[in-house]
Length: 459
Ligand code: MN
Ligand code: MN
Image (cartoon, rainbow, N blue to C red):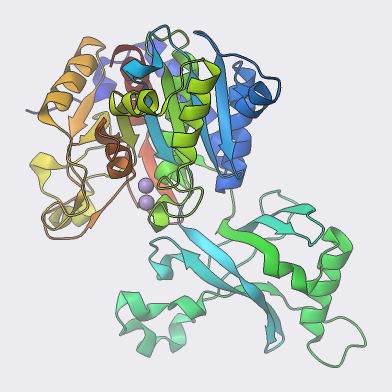
């Protein structure tokens, strides 16, 4: 049952491919730090690969046939790509799914205030974070402010070398005796996560002069008023680029790898698997970190609607055929897995843990406690997946999130399983999951991409 390190099988050719993929991946991470930015990059890459917007096909009353490639974007935050295969859609699709939202800190709707000569944005964190990890490091602001006339103002401050960065302050160690005695969940609390954005007063202003100066800067640079924050989505993320990590550059360190490492590799595989027998599909969705809710989360009907539109364009839509298509589909629900960390060995059960460099991770089930909230894939499906991976020489391993009863987590798997399709959780092992900077193995990224291609063409 011992799995080998993927590295050991690599010749120069594979090393080169792996390095190239990791470099492209870092660029993807740098350009897509929010779900909206990710959708923009994904659409750009898809269009370069010949994918067309389904809305344009519908508007021009166009038809779809085998070999056609289309994508459907929902509310600028989720996207589904389809590569129409030779077989009938009723026979089902091979689907890759991952999420493109990541834990972060969102700006509140009434955020701006001044205190002690500083201006701050008040915030509300998004997803599961260890709050103490987000202080005393450079932060960037990404997002949109939408004015009442509908104009969308894009904001991205803190990534360009010439940009200023932002910070959440921490208490100096010299005065931290009480703080250091607190529980880790209380060291920094939600309402303390306010982001420092200025200290310079506007001249000749009596009250809240620093805040007034911030408002003036926002007016001058972006033509936005304080009230425009009411209709904004501003996300605070770590400032800076993804980097190779380790003296041997064997790893990638970057923000938002949960779950953009699976989103990126799924997208690459989707583009690479050019002429599939069955229709292939790649769904990259928002809101997983807060329960897959909302119109752009996986629980929304946008995906089902997109499949209906695709079937309609191929001239084969009926409610029954749509249901057959979904029920006959097979899916890899891709999300990151907890990598075995020797520094926290007691959190893992080593026989069923994911190790760096051992390739694609399959989780037959996730959930917490007695598998609560899990999808728990069928043994028959797992057997088929094993066969595909072995035949295509993909390094893979199986794992659980950690020791039973220590915690747990969920994915989007159970939502697609509602259609009665075969679904299994899989993905890439990550160190520091949900921390501002997460770490993955280049070998795992490479194996997962190859594994996705094998799945799309053979499942
Ligand atoms: Mn995830
Ligand atoms: Mn997560």
